[in-house]
Length: 73
View 1: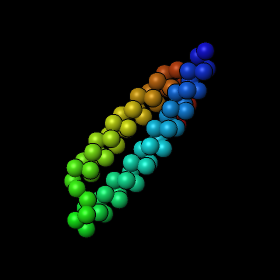
View 2: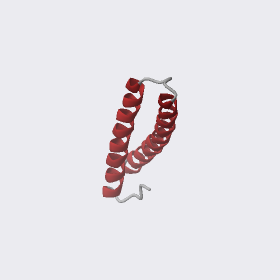
View 3: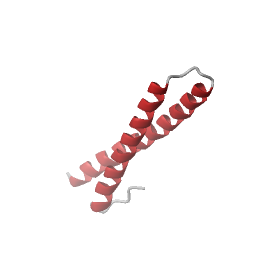
View 4: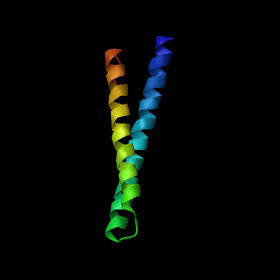
């Protein structure tokens, strides 16, 4: 059961890392559009908030996996 939990946590960590990368790409796209006056600051702020929340979630998952003795990175 313990191994199953760690596997689930590791898969969740992979998903969070992928989402973090996609949010970085979205943020870069919105920054470029904002320079061209095509994007709203609201969308950019929303993406930045999601990016911070994702980073916090990633840190929590890494901390849990390290406490359980698994290599998280």
